[in-house]
Image: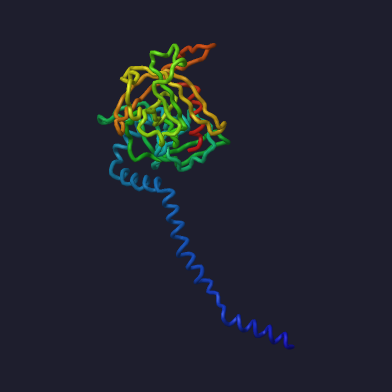
Length: 326
């Protein structure tokens, strides 16, 4: 009897002081969580939201001009090359296609050739490149837009539709994607004057990168900005002393080593490069745009030079692993 009365008092005591306002609690969560989720969604899809808002006004005020360009693309069966596109530039190629029709702001594509693709493509940003043509005195060969519809079977792309772009424009096309590396020492380069191509391996390089560039001070060194299968862009930092010829048209023998994160080793190749452009960099640095024209093949104790058409194939395959993920 005493135990029963004790339990009764405990229940009455706690039951009288603890009140859960369920609706008030849920409303507080709603007021905090919903705005946070909304901000996250808007930030994640900010590019496509901005694109659609601007496109709405462009379609409203420039409908006739856009319709004529789109009619030309459809009637002429213009072949377009569709690739992923980001702030870093042109990425993985998706397909070659023709624009079959344009309906309600969507381009329905007739796929000609596709690349295997495992990544999610819906709402992905793409760039479409095509053979240049002129309209009202303006050259057009590209446009940037977003994927509005896609269908695939396994890794094979079966259907693809794009939103009509904000504008059609002309850009300078590059055959190869330029690859940048976050760590400067990820790409090592040794360079000799092109006049040494018959016996370059017997002499010390005229220019080279260093392992610890931050600690190298005012010493002369090379720094790589980007590289592609077609060439390399680099700088001669703190140039001094006797340099090899570095004018347009001069050649350099280049031993390029690139860090392979899969094998944890450097992969290297040797190429003969022709300087196509020279420009000034920060701190009196000399900038060089170099095109690969020949690749070295070791035969015994010597090297022979094989001309390359459009780039070094082995380098293109190696760099492609860095572009599989958009």
